Length: 110
Image 1 (cartoon, rainbow, N blue to C red):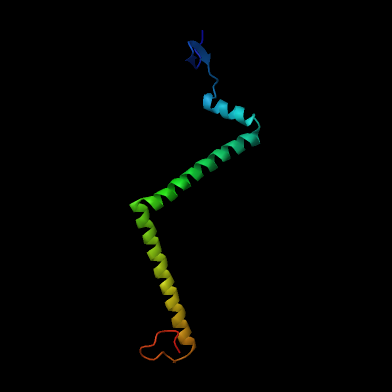
Image 2 (cartoon, rainbow, N blue to C red; image 1 turned 90 degrees about the vertical axis):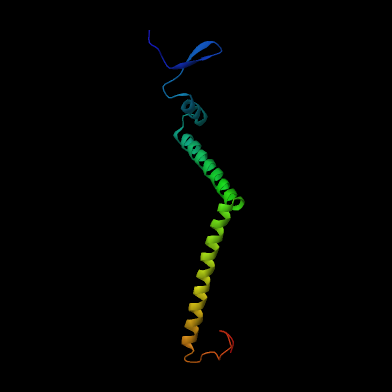
């Protein structure tokens, strides 16, 4: 007598297929159609990814570590914008020639 894989259910031994119960359930849902199976797998991945995205957003907004991360990136972005504006203003001054603003006047005041 061969011992097969299975489990007791309500006092009776129930044989399990080689695929296992989780895989058999997925195949039954997909109707054994390869495209339905693929759609089911991708849907599961999308659902998991969306859940992870929501968890990340919550962590960024609701934790001190998230606040520090956002603050750090905002500081980098703002310094990059300031550098870009400085370069633009310097280039504009070079195009106009040696006409530099008078002392006490900021860029853009003519």
